[in-house]
Amino acid sequence: MQYHFEGRLTARDCKRHIPHSFVVPDDYGQMEIRFRFAPYSVHGIPNLLTLTLFDPNGFRGAGHRDGAEHPVRISATEATPGYLRGPLPAGEWIAQIDTHMIMPGETVRYWLDITMGGDAHRQTARQGTPAIHSARTLPRGAGWCRGDLHTHTHHSDATGRVTAELIQMARDQGLDFIFLTDHNTIAGLDEMDALAPDDLLTAGGIELTTFWGHALCLGTREWVDWRIRPDTDEMERIARAIYANDQVFVIAHPQSSGDPGCTGCAWRCGKMMPGTARLVEVWNGPWQCDANNEQALALWYDWLNQGLRLAATAGTDTHGGQDYANQPGFNVVYAETLSESAILRSLRAGRLYLSAGPKIAFAAQGANGTNCMIGETVTQSARFSLTWDNCPADAQIRVIANGRLHSRRTASPHGEMEWEMTPEQAHWLVVEVRGGNGEMLAITNPIFLQTTPCNQTEERRA
Image (cartoon, rainbow, N blue to C red):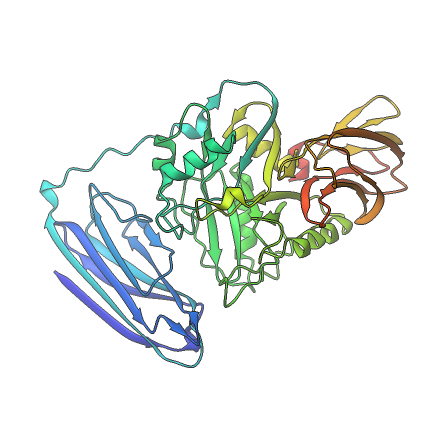
């Protein structure tokens, strides 16, 4: 059985979801899809059209990747990366074309061919790997652990980089944990868990790659519908649902250069500035890149000055084998155990700093002896303490109070300093470590100051 669809699109059709429905009878066990379009680029800038597939039960996969031709093959025992293997349920299916970018100046033609074959009764479904690793706890106690919250494989647009290679990259870097966040698909998560070694915690996630901004949903192993409009409260509802499931929602690279070079990468969700979001990625990839991390940092500082309790995160956004060699920022998280659930709790509480190498300890002790760490609040005069290690000789230690430079000193490779401050002097403090060229080497999350006591539990913070 075959289906054929074709059509023409112009720039007016950009940022649309175009469904093509077809019926699968109950006696087929294999499906092949060929989606192609032309021209691939206009004035040297690529068009980006991708495919999302739904069966009668819901999400069946997505191919968020570059290229003018997208072949897909699905059966009970195999699936093209990005898609989910399994039997083909009878009923109405939808092949949806997602028009992330259609450049003006030339009409785009597309062709969609769907072929079904095979005997469903001869197909034996491969047993899926139970998602046991999401509940795994590696054998170590409370302490600081280092990892990556934003990664990609060939299940989306990290062309040629299979899941095993990403895991080996993380091990070579000495990471303790890694979240897989492929674009608009969860197809790689079972494989990620199945390949997890004993010395690396693998964790689930997805990057919602919408037309109006990207967001990480960390801890989920379910597909999240990313088809939102920026003038609605749909993204707010997604964030609330993620937090309600004890997961984490992160606004990703909010000040990225965006269209047309990085389609949808700039945060344009007007009702989520930051809305219900409680974490924002201020360090994406290397500090100097088209994610415009300096502007993202300024945006975060502005949100903190508005009285919002947002935690900052880093993400390498790795798509290739050399990304970890380009001095990206990693997340150094204080967790009670090395488990996915404990890391998610610490992220929600802001108990982390971001670093491309330096080690930082930042804490405060109130006049009554109460000790506070990163992410917590002091309610009286306090003595702040800072120690650092593994800093280059030309680095600078910068204490930032309410977004302004409070103090600065040249860093020796390792050192310490202390100072006093009251809630009347500042509402929040962070510490930056910058290199001699001004690039960020490390940055803490805030310690907050306020004159009235507050509940410092993560539920209040979230």
